[in-house]
Length: 295
Image (cartoon, rainbow, N blue to C red; front, side, top):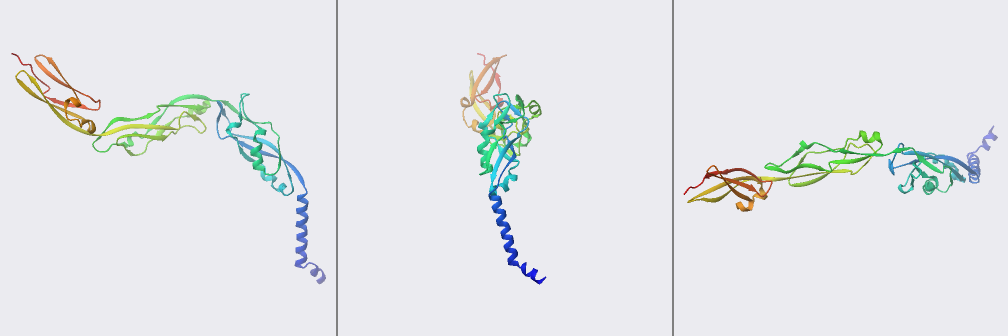
């Protein structure tokens, strides 16, 4: 028994283990093997040349031959994922497909030094015809827009574009309900803000990805202008009260702000004032009429 234990000394066991490993390495390094692996081909887009992909994943088979230590990595190659470059699509036959050999460079990058043979001539993606529809864009949260104190709207908030084109399968575009959502914001002056469009199903194409919200506000002010109007021997001082954007009311004379007109009716002269700007309103005119002088 003691003699057997002396044979199984640690240094002897280590020698046996190293010899076994050396044998395994030599055996593997001289071995050749081939395996068929499945490669998942993925499309980053849902629409290709007016065709809607029903599934963005397809499977192709590749025969991979390896030698030596590379054999150990063959199992890991199964279900490798490759993405289709946009310039490789082929739709000439009315179906969406990509030529298997065109994917060879990408497969080689993924599989390294292995010998590769593409089994499938084409990788086909099931598809249906893509259709288009125009849909209006809804604006949610207009009540969250506020004005600084003493300001008014010159141009109420509105969006551009009002409608968008949505492209996809019939079922997808029917479920689309495009909208933008506004946040709390104080609107001072002329502004144009871009908002991402929401409510469009994933993969559908749209004529734009963002909606522009436009509007303009201004500080509001009131102003009185006066001018004199002679009727016979009498001179009337006419007062016109105006309301509008402060910047537009900076002009100091009636001629700069608008046009005075007189109308004779029923022995009276009626005074009218037409502002030069659509943003200016006439609050009152005093006197708004006076009697016609008779000789």
